[in-house]
Image (cartoon, rainbow, N blue to C red):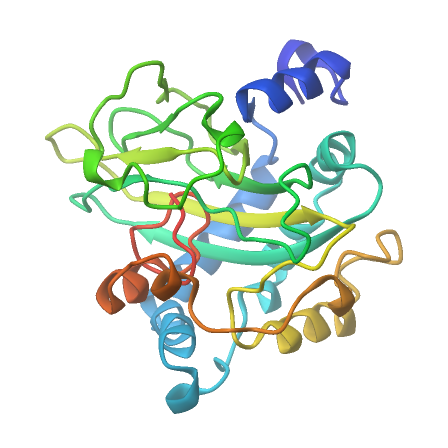
Length: 293
């Protein structure tokens, strides 16, 4: 399930992650789970649920919480605590970590790339040694028809703003690693402070890029939430028993500060960019509440 056929991350994988800031887990998600996730992503996009979720973050006083949360979609809820993923995160974060956010999107052919950025949120101890990790799940894999993910190894070791490299757009940077060949169901784990960019697919017909991203944080400090309805989100996860009694801290409210406004506004993003980035994790479209790839 992991590189080399191992079923669990070893010390070398953890060392690699801590030094480079990323780890590739090919084929982490089984076909049965992918087949359930893709229709849920289609529903999330086609029924306007994603747009409603973005609006709830961009203007919470006007829109209030969205009518449906990603984690209420059955396969998405299952993905949050997919056992191989939990084992990998335990090796990287330790036995106690907390769920931060979930983002789901279908990026259709022709969607532009997302400029260089990172997605790390602050904690109230201003402690960079406490890790926040994004799990980027590529349901259909990565290839020339959907584009690639470029990462800048080691960039997570510098404390700079999310948009410090945004002026480079999606251009190639010295020392980058381009991840553009992954089988379906592959996952890339990122230190959330690692700079990365979504490269658009080369010219051609292309195909939709199905992307789900979830973020988790080490306990030991209180983290800034990025969604104004974060309490409702954690409460709903507890009601659904998504932790299945195995991860007592995973949806605990005590690991968060109060919500203080949009992360994109404080990071210097425009309202339009925020409304587009929506904590897409690390790979958003440049559209949602935290902006992923």
